Image (tube, rainbow, N blue to C red; front, side):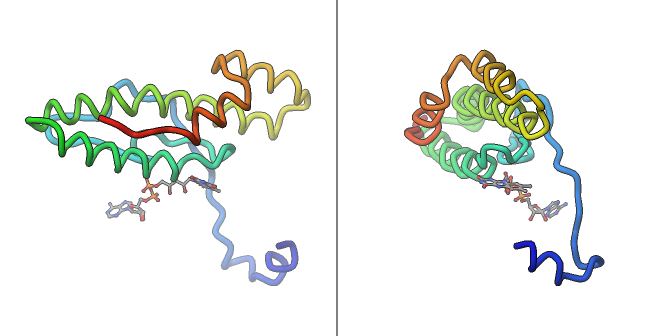
Length: 133
Ligand SMILES: Cc1cc2nc3c(=O)[nH]c(=O)nc-3n(C[C@H](O)[C@H](O)[C@H](O)COP(=O)(O)OP(=O)(O)OC[C@H]3O[C@@H](n4cnc5c(N)ncnc54)[C@H](O)[C@@H]3O)c2cc1C
């Protein structure tokens, strides 16, 4: 990777900041809703941004297929997705800070306190998720 970067002309390297945002309380207005980074931008520390985007899309489709109207579908979608992605956003933000923290143990403890889950519990929770609506 180092050699690849060194051989790439500087002007061809795109450098942009990584941005996240505090979790939103709602994603929908009228007939319009958000998913993916538009709904829950997160630091890439845990590699969960695209994963949770796929989950959003799948669950949004399920909600539309099972609800009697758009309002109910979007309300159910938000109830399903916002709590889960909030937790991932928070954990990702804390994970990103860990890269810069001088006291690694302290930041890991902070991460566990924040989410009330150990790393193992988090992995189970994140990767054994069963979408439903
Ligand atoms: C360095 C880095 C590493 C990452 N690693 C991982 C990882 O390992 N695992 C993981 O799951 N996630 C990872 N992610 C996160 C992942 O890339 C994003 O969460 C995911 O791409 C979000 O998908 P999205 O469809 O919401 O947004 P995007 O992928 O950003 O798609 C939005 C699209 O909309 C287009 N667009 C914008 N404005 C307009 C407009 N006005 N009109 C038309 N089109 C428009 C954009 O060009 C873009 O193609 C990483 C992110 C970064 C930055």
